[in-house]
Length: 562
Ligand SMILES: CC(=O)SCCNC(=O)CCNC(=O)[C@H](O)C(C)(C)COP(=O)(O)OP(=O)(O)OC[C@H]1O[C@@H](n2cnc3c(N)ncnc32)[C@H](O)[C@@H]1OP(=O)(O)O
Ligand SMILES: CC(C)C(=O)C(=O)O
Image 1 (cartoon, protein in one colour):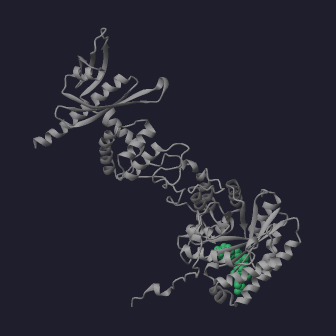
Image 2 (image 1 turned 90 degrees about the horizontal axis):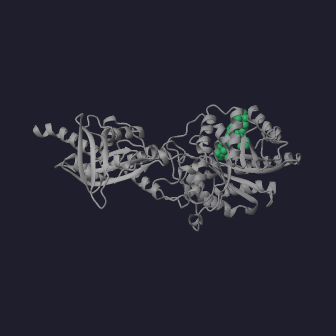
Image 3 (image 1 turned 45 degrees about the horizontal axis):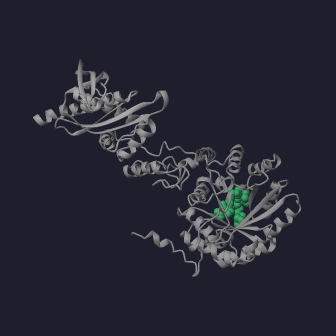
């Protein structure tokens, strides 16, 4: 019998907060960032990090500018304990960085946790217990009062133990684990009880971390929950409200952003979203989202590829090619209209102006990424993409109608090969089609412009060309060198358009010429050539176009005969 699996689940109730304020707010400053890569991230790895990897990760976090780093769960293993001791004893923690250590609210674990930090300049003991109904019922078998007692007793013990080590500036972080699936009034009750024990002040605030341990609702619900807590908790002025979103529904970034709008001061997460199950919220995406709103996140991702490389090595999990801001393909456009818009955007973008390149939410250069991969060509691409690559890589600025003409050549090749067409392939196609034509009927050999007699307006030319491998001298006159050359050839040529530009500068500069012409009753076609002499380049371009016309007629002749 068919059953309906969705009947196993129930809808998440809305939060009764009719006058919610967060939807009208914008984020105009970054939250405090807390990296839990070395704890929540590490505990979710198939193979937890070695101390050496943990240290490299820690140093990278410091370099990025993260000031609060959760370095482990010291009571869980000797490795974690030793790692914290190493950081402390080898004085590897910069003065402006605070380490955080996580513990369950259990006496032995708390003792060991505090012990791990002794001697640190500053440290935050992060204690948690799960508070949601299913945990109370299934995991702990306790009622609300007993659950509150676990948190209160744990906090009392931490307070007592840290008092024995006054050389360290101690802080407390309390997490009612599974907060987002807990009744709000019970979360308030347990947090108030912990805060009451700790007795924070404006100078020594308690961090109240409100996790969505398992993301279970839409991000607006989480924002409502955070706003509700911010409004209802006692001593709000002495609390740092922190959020710790997981990504089970794929909306952790949105949840964190809305939570900050709702009043959260601090966000815990991992680089590129590592962490339990679908991961913790991705701190990189959050930070760079801020960047794109004109708010500096206070973190340095100016060499994002180096950060990714380190994270991939330490986590042994690859970052997805479509991962926001960092994935291999996220600044790449294959499709024609995107390429066209990006190319136009780059051309208009001024160095210091507001970033307005279509389809690129951020300047890849700000992340240390090059523009090389922005445009890549395959069968989905149009003229803009291949024109961009020819310009960027080879300095060729094709006129618009030539772009259209040549894109058919590229398209044919892309359809035939089915894969990507690299810039070098495009250039090879262009070279074969326009510059070094196989079996060309005409080839330029030389020319001499005859000195004008004074007052004479027409130009005279003596030129030599090869026609079907036979060297032929020609003479002609015209109202300019190209006209004279065309007349000298004695062919029925009508010049339609002409473009030129230089490639490079100084002694190495060369001229690129593009000529559009019609031969007899044929279609208008382009020719192109490059030469160190601009006049020579233009003559070669004329012959390039003529050769293409002749090749086309030869190709069409048998078809017409048939
Ligand atoms: C949402 C999070 O990510 S929280 C962090 C999770 N991280 C980890 O679990 C990794 C580190 N933890 C560990 O390595 C181990 O759990 C240890 C070493 C800390 C403890 O090991 P053990 O004592 O052998 O086992 P375990 O964690 O299963 O203990 C469960 C007991 O602790 C109790 N408990 C669980 N969490 C808490 C808590 N936060 N506070 C108080 N008691 C707790 C449980 O009710 C259970 O009690 P019971 O034995 O009376 O039924
Ligand atoms: C310990 C807490 C903050 C946690 O990791 C979670 O709830 O996911």
